[in-house]
Length: 106
Image 1 (cartoon, rainbow, N blue to C red):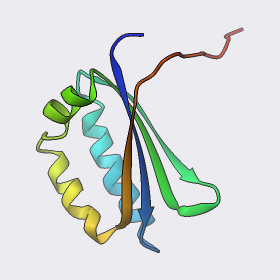
Image 2 (image 1 turned 180 degrees about the vertical axis):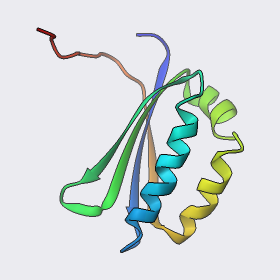
Image 3 (image 1 turned 60 degrees about the vertical axis):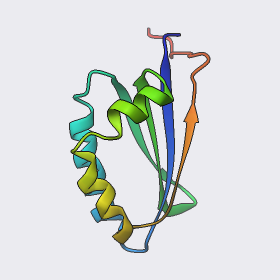
């Protein structure tokens, strides 16, 4: 596999803040998906806790290149600044893909 990094972000939301959070998240994803190193992202809702959202992002490069090139982009600042009003807790796991098994196509 080529050099890729995955961010697995778990976000515990304040009660009642999910619609506002999702609006801001979709807005920032709309911009970041235009970045040359962006591969994909998937937003998940925890079935057992609807106030927890998990975001899975795949990027070309490494953790170091992502932190140096993607995180400082100016469009991220308003999103990051808004999280204090919306989020109870957020954690990021950095994953390195080892293998992929695409579904067969008929």
